[in-house]
Length: 430
Image 1 (cartoon, rainbow, N blue to C red):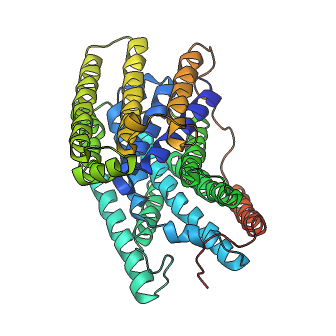
Image 2 (cartoon, rainbow, N blue to C red; image 1 turned 30 degrees about the horizontal axis):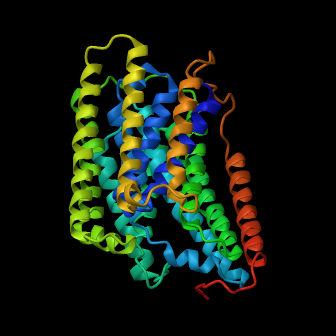
């Protein structure tokens, strides 16, 4: 497929996944969205060698996007709503950092997976230890030695994710995985910008007084921009060799994507007490019966989509035709995405209240359908699979990129301060 098709589908589906993640939260909600992003890249790449490793590669993407999900950022958004330029700039800068951590990990681990080959394979055990130690040392040094808090009095686990990201970046540079590092950096910039720009949209929406879930719009924007950057970085890199598929690795990846992630989200988000509270808000006469039925609905969906995924991937064992294999990958991609969408609607009570134009969740289904249409039209186009960059990345280019980031953050903060009269609720850092 074309580079543009890959970028649009990945952007839409990571945006959709991140918006749905808002109803689940934290690491495990982010992992589902990350898995969708990895599958979007794979299904639009038209590379059979990647398709043979689909579950394992998508699982790496899920893990990468999930790690920074431990970070707390609610109070940072409060800083952005103020009228003091210093506080507002601090808020948007720290949102860029948190969003950047999502993207760096997500792009870095996924990029490492697709750059790995039989000749050059990462030492996963060593990398995990280095990331754990890096996260612990960075968090301990900044929190306990310097006491440089970013989100007081909230959790400061962003620092653990930052240390792990630095360790991952150093590992990629040291071991010569430069393409993966390139993907990590560009995805970091895209997701960081998406978080800051998305919150600018949210602040504008709140200042208009229009009743809408602007927070969800911000979440979609983060995922959309992060997915756009991820797809662009992958599509403009020249990928040659890849690893021989691991049967056990693929099956573990499949179970991680379709069993462990959904099961933990089911346990955490579909509690009877939560559904009973939702039923009260919806005006349902028998909250307990409603709660039990919705929990069973969620569990049955888990069984259905897990069974479908196992059936599809089992077919890949005997598949020799690339055209059949890409259909299997597409089946996994759209199944995982539809599964998350339906679970999101269950958690929101949408199957009772129905789709409403004033509810941001109503947009989920059209976004999913748009990606589906793009995929089926895009696969008909006879366009080269990869359009690689022909020039070397340089420190000068990186310096210009990050100087641009600084300018954009200054501009966003300036616009944010001047778009409202200070009547919004906000927090002050300084």
